[in-house]
Length: 233
Image (cartoon, helix red, strand yellow):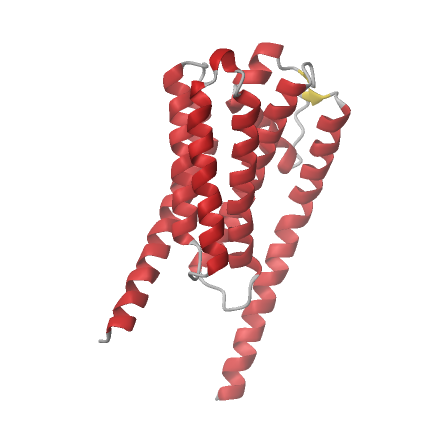
């Protein structure tokens, strides 16, 4: 076995392990953390930032290929992580909008990485399916951070969440985000600010279109792969 082959095998194992860990971290963030984190204590906020940083690192490790574009995205994510942790030094919570904006940027970049893996050329693999699930969950988390930023900039943007909760309890907004993304719409939380309503409409539209688009892409890739295999034979 040559050195290049060994390097490729190690890179493949790194991608597979990174995708598994990424999915586990996303599941913890969406389903476990809201149950455990019920306050705005320092420990709870640290747990959120540790999870976010870990998600970004695992997302870069799980990304296919090693191009200059990926290196630049990894650098931007590293800077975003540093800026988010530096936000702890801001007195009286004045750095909260910056920290939320950085979280939105970094998760959006990670979503773009997952998008290239899901919708790019190739065959249907476990990594592609895992990337599709991860991308769907990332959409919900990006919108949750956007709702939190809106609630800070425009107080009273949501009915059903107190002004205090809207600015600090991210778990509540994660819940609202995925309720909107899946178009369940329980009605216990309602956006009233114009920008909050527009974002909610956009998220609901994505929630409706995304499964259909991903399913169509996976089917087309599978059909194309089967067709090329039969032609070769």
